[in-house]
Length: 227
Image 1 (cartoon, helix red, strand yellow):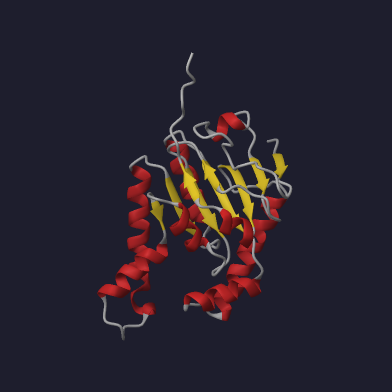
Image 2 (tube, rainbow, N blue to C red):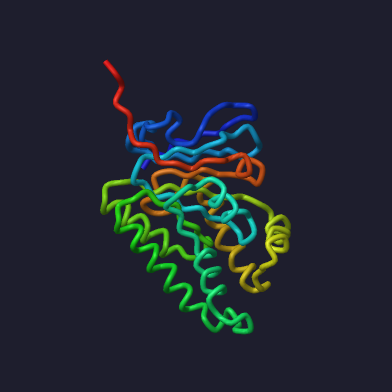
């Protein structure tokens, strides 16, 4: 499979797939070859548009800004495990350790994701980067309904990610963070070399600055040009 790789230089006015609102990503890229668009280094777009019904998975280190990006840029159809955890924490006694009910939170999160995928709606999914089976599941579901899976990968240093964890007041253990670093590092290296996760149609590489500039992730319906 041939991969087309694109890089955006500073100051360029290009957007993500599709570049024009309402044009499906598969048409914008010729319909076959997956695309890696590298927006790191500044000059990225202020919004990302994908085809209606597509699935977008946002991945990166804990503290890299995945939830912040989703909450800022996605108006609906966002599936974030952090939201599920927050709902459970609000409903349970504060002294109950998260480790006790973490399996229930995960089950509730994946149940909500399953319902969203089965609805056929466009969806943006928070991905911790360590669960490759989740991306395979998303690819199967996108293929089942004839749409595409796209990866948004946040590339930040471990130091920046740790700072992000401190800012949100919630971190992960050293062991868990090391596991995330290995998994996200492999995903980043593979993506940079053009090796996308199975079933993934495109990937967008973001750093902290270009991710902060994105105020919209949307799925406009394709527009029929007027005669």
